[in-house]
Amino acid sequence: MDCSFCGKKIEKGRGKIVVDKAGKSFYYCSSKCEKNHRKLGREPKKTKWVK
Image (cartoon, rainbow, N blue to C red):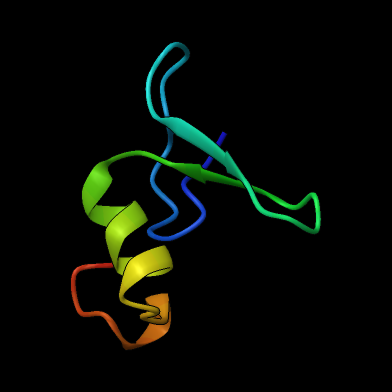
């Protein structure tokens, strides 16, 4: 599985899965990625530390 924000590989048993109201699943490797994507509404391509 890859992180929905940064694209980093997530090891089995790690990370977090979030499902929105529409039923779409998002996978996050850390709370940093989750916060940037969901709460702050940032786009990965505009963030320097993302692949």
